[in-house]
Amino acid sequence: MGPNPKPIRALLVDDHTLFRESVAAVLSKEPGLEIQHCGSIREALPLLSLVPFDLVLLDHDLGTERASQFLPAARQSGFEGRVLVVTAWVSDNEARRLIRQGVAGIFLKEAPLSELIEGIRIVAAGGTWLDRSLVDAERDGAAEPSTPVFNERQRKVLRLVMEGLSNKEIAWRLQISESYVKAILQSLFQKTGVRTRGQLVRVAFEQYENQL
Image (cartoon, rainbow, N blue to C red):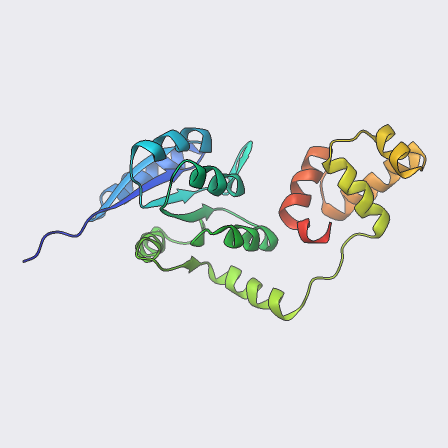
């Protein structure tokens, strides 16, 4: 018999402690898998410089951190492995953004653990893994270009909100009244289903970046 194949070294990055500890414990029992885990990108980057991980299992929403922040920082630190995003939910636009960035796959947490193990092995071997619902969304998005969600005035206000300007500053920049700015913001809140400026900026980056 030949030598045992090299084990897959994976780092699970998820801010939910119970989830990552439970999943890491199960995955570690799988033959040929070595799993470490941590709770943030900030914690992950030093580990990547110390251990030659083959694969990072990365949650999309890490509280104050996002999956899209990981890959540029990881590549800069010298990480050359692959990334499989493991998340409860991701918008179609954000999924496309992550794929353009270079992630090797997106796995939804609603799927069984056996599929995650399969996805890990496929991605570690050089393949890709994309949840079936995201494959359908990719196909639909390619067939039907998305129509603009916002009118021109809403886009202008949203861009300035994303720059961090106050209502007063936006009103001065666009030469409109502050009350009109507030009305436009309310329409943006209703259209995107959010309640705060912070949520609006986050949703705009994730779901509507291609329309700004």
